[in-house]
Image (cartoon, rainbow, N blue to C red; front, side, top):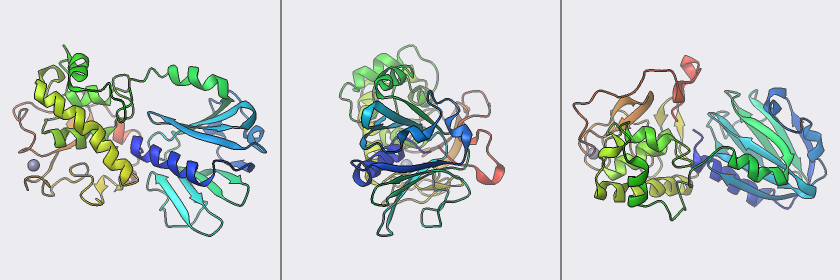
Amino acid sequence: MPELPEVETARRNIGRDVVGRRLDAVTVRLPKLLRDSPIPDPGVLVGRELLAAHRRAKLLWLDFSDGLSLMMHLKLAGQIAIFRPDGTRAVAGHPVPAPAGPYPHKVTHADLLFTGGTLVHYSDVRQFGWWRIMPTEDIAGTVAGFGFGPEAVGDATVTGPWLRERFARRGVPVKTVLLDQRVLAGLGNIYVDEALHAAGIHPARPAASLAGPELDRLAETIPGSLAWGIAQGGAKIIHQRAYPVDGFPAVHAREGEPCPACGTAITKTRVGGRGTYLCPTCQPGASAVPAIGPSRESGDEISGKPGDRQAG
Ligand SMILES: [Zn+2]
């Protein structure tokens, strides 16, 4: 969290509210936000028109006039809040700061003020996120350097047979393979749990053990779960507890609640070191297999403070 649907929601909000406007001012209160930026001074963006907002996997970038772009990665806890001159707001990403609360929050590290008075607040309670300012012509090479696989939603090449090729000879849990951004770009902990539940596949099953019909189902439920998340404007998960909207998410961060498909209590385990939610009735087949994978600190608990843990 934020995952692809949350970043896509941020991109759409920016496209609707500030594309076509000129940047009048930029404030960065956390210098390390720009720690890896090819151009270190955000002031170079002032006076330029925002031409477009793009996303690939969980990367978001804004193209400004005269050949400069601002790339962002929200990492584990980034949030983009847009405040319009009429007092309304649109918030996407991590649920801290509280979307309905006051801004700038103490974890709001940067502001972008656009012509007409629309203000974009960038917040990140964990400070893992980053901004990089670079020539627009360098964007394609930078994105290619991440080695992403095809987009997990909206790419027609992702079919059951395609997944079979990627899963062949891979004895690691299917969840681990699906989290690999070089296989599929944009899938994270929340939506892997959702897609595997919808497909009736236990997340600890070795990837290579999945049969043809299971792969066909998975090829549908992966984009289906992401599209559902995008339609909801992202998932609301606070302190490893989901606040579902219209039944979404169905299993992630809902330990002990009834499975929406069969009523069995949802259980939590660890797969590949990640907190994992599943329905033992809908997702059979690995009940004799202990949670696979090293118990390394990673993913949703990475350097988290005990009171601030966040699934995804
Ligand atoms: Zn179930």
